[in-house]
Image 1 (cartoon, rainbow, N blue to C red):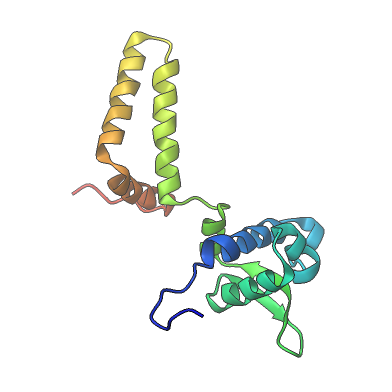
Image 2: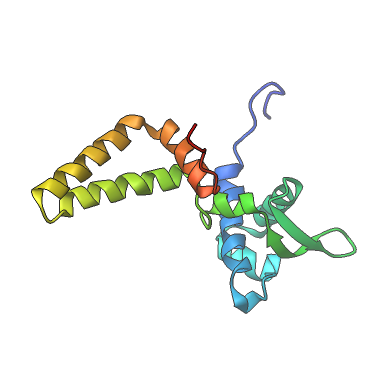
Length: 154
């Protein structure tokens, strides 16, 4: 038995996130009509046991990540949609951190493959400057770009 003041076990990484990713894959598949069955599609798609998938689906619904269709008993039968945040968490949509990492990778690759020494030096300087900005400030910049907001010059 766990003492009452002990921290609770993590359910996000071992249970909820894999179920969310399975749901995200299935919701976008035309095969399921955009509303996969929890037991028939999500359970096998997640690779987790039925009881864990049901518990994860309830937690995801309570958090607003998924839109469940329930039967008269209140059991989740199908998933009819997912939120924008769920799409980001599942990796379907970009995140500022992910886009910053992609920008850094692109700058490095272009520096390595530049056809001339001048271009190589410019891309190397850009890659070094971007890396010096750091992931926190870089993610803030990418948040503005991914979200479509670019501050105006004053």
